[in-house]
Length: 111
Image (tube, rainbow, N blue to C red):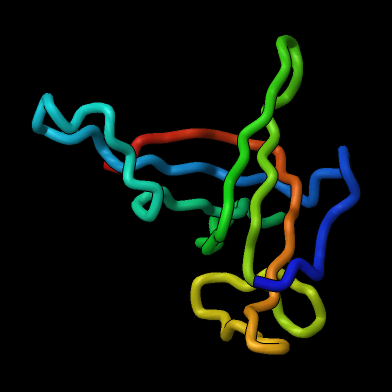
């Protein structure tokens, strides 16, 4: 994947909600979190949540600081984030991606 778009370090580009899958019912599988079942939603200015497909996720925090996440996402030719129905852009045989920093507004368990 081609890394073409980023936000400046320390400059969050918005807020996200991280949604984890429910815990497995089998005790022997309790430690497994299948990352492809994690959903990320960007909180839009009007309060709506838009599904944001991601290629990587790094959650960061320090004591007494706001939780942030660096999120690798697919981007379009203008380096705008692509949402669930966006069409990925390929350049030189690789999908265009970018890394954006977000404030983590919430972490919840899918119901």
